[in-house]
Length: 327
Image (tube, rainbow, N blue to C red; front, side, top):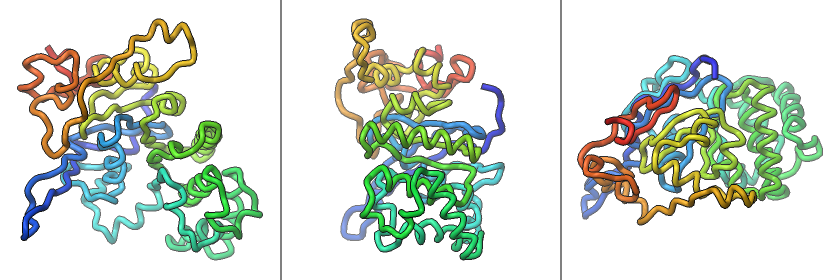
């Protein structure tokens, strides 16, 4: 990939949730949902975050947008540090960064028609007069594959796929530069998933969008992504371009995840070695010493319990946090 302009830089981001207990509700510990991760996102690319449930990928997306206030770290959007911006001043940046949720029904106000749902962001940010907002709403509805007949209907009158199209239209009507998609297709049927993914690709090209795609579905990620970051227990285990990651995974955790992808090709099934991880994901409030993955890693050795692996560039544009590559 050529060196595109970096839109977003995440530097040593942390998000700890306090654990309170006792009569006085004092803080007794922290859940380390996101624990010192760094990455960048380039203009017009799709950067994906993958990992098991509870690995911190959704919290990362929300912390970037300050829906969860970060505990520490920096988030630079077009060179401006979002962490330093006051809450009142942050509002003008919201229109450039949008979030599409997993469940379109709960993210849409059931008491508002599609027309009102789409006009509201334009009027709130004072980007259009009511007449202009109505015109832009009609245009956007058609771009996401719905018709003007749907404008006066309510969310409960639509299928799941149609609701997600409305959510996409609502996010994109502000013409944002960055869109975070948090499991945006995981609640949909497989046939509908492919339609929504193709729509997202089409809209990305048309509006020159940058995506952060959060998912646990590695097949979907492979289809949509330019680069992929693999998270485990709040930390970044590996990051590389999609083709490099899928063809040559370096981290034992990434290898295990990719080995679990189902295949309908009999030859692939024969040649594929399934890596079954033992044990459960550790408690993020009490993570293990050293490497967070060591308790389940088939390649773990003494050093893994003593030292946290450095996040290094093992190959060109291929980053990994593993002692196997840092001798």
